[in-house]
Amino acid sequence: MRRSLLAAIILTGFSLSAIAQTKVEVASIVRAEESFNKLVERKGIKDGFLAVADPEGIVFKPNTVKITDFYSGIQNQPGKLSSQPKFARLSANGDLGFTAGPYVYQNGKTDDDKVYGDYVSIWRLDNADSKFKLLVNLGIQHPEPEQEVVTDFKEPDLTKQKAASKDPFAGKSVLTATDKTLNHSLELSAMAAYKEFLSPEARYYFPGFEPMTGSDKILKFIDNEGISISAETDNVGRSTSNDLAYTYGTARIRKGNIVNNYNYVRIWEIDANHRWNMLLEIFSTVEN
Image 1 (cartoon, one colour):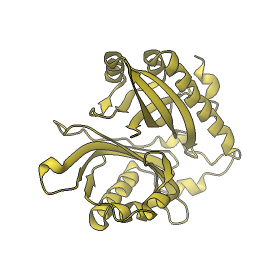
Image 2 (cartoon, one colour):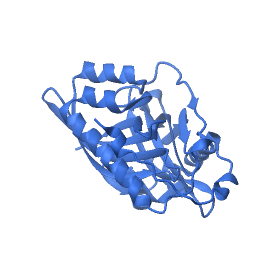
Image 3 (cartoon, helix red, strand yellow):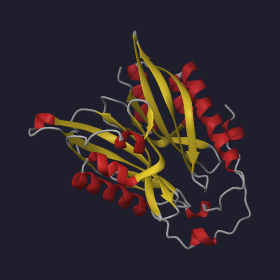
């Protein structure tokens, strides 16, 4: 596959002074997640999500719905939710990032009432108040983890800072083509597709399993499970520095005679050869 044809970089001549005046560090996105978690613990799930929602922010309940529409339309969601960021990245311009980590949801008084899982949250900087707002949130359930998750926070490469493109749609078209190419490749061979698109340090989140780290472990899982995947792109987005991006859509996954529907979210990062590599993928089951 000639993926390099899909990853053209748009050069711009704007001043970067506004970016330079803002300190860009991964700790800022981690703090946003931690503040959100405290809000949820203090005010409850509904009010916590509404307090940090981006105007275009979405959740999957089970289909795509705006955060504000969903949580404004329900009563206070029962139970307690606690989570902890363990994996985070931020774009070079500091306007787009993500956090991921374990969560525990409890709607009862005993340990038997606890539900364990992992979440992925995508955050976008709101220029009006210089605060990160929740853009995408998705999670999976799995058995109680047997060991502590290793923290992985990596600072952005500030040499990739650039001013926003005059034509933001051009960059989105590259991402759309990349995501659709991966989806087409998955239908032909999941193993071959992931070998082509996975970052070596990729994370893979699949319902019922603890997150897998590293392309070797992910490929072993795909091979052992013997699954086939067909997927369709719904939407894409990227940072203004064009080094971090996300896509999401729907998927049907077959294992033997069993077929289930899923939502997926992918995080992409660009490499030195200007190719988009998949850093993270999460599938969430669409309940019937």
